[in-house]
Length: 162
Image 1: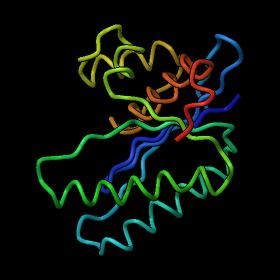
Image 2 (image 1 turned 60 degrees about the vertical axis):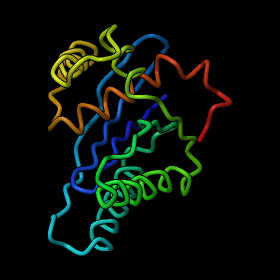
Image 3 (image 1 turned 135 degrees about the horizontal axis):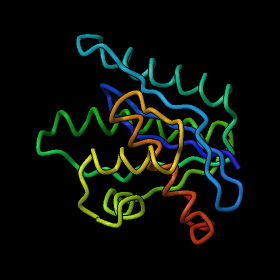
């Protein structure tokens, strides 16, 4: 089973691919989609779309998972994040890939045992659980953490597709 983890953002959307065979996890790839801050919003969204299309076609995941995001205190930032999230939500659907959603605290707890763990603790556990993995940045590390979480909970969420 191949899992795609996604961490949406307008500035740097993280992605991570892992394979699972029973309880065994193995690292496949990770990265992030950086968009230029001064580019028009439509161009930035198209960059996310185009790169996710390439990633899905290259790695052919069976399922995808995403973090539930909370609104930012800045309405403009929240709106841009929501638009990027919409593109990220759309992509698995275009390829008939089921998409599952997890809360940030559940992801942190699944990896570290602590629902309020910091990014360094999460990244350390990603590296331990996926030997040989060196995430490209925090966004790709978070995406791999989301994929790992999905592997741990996927059997209990078969009907919890978003």
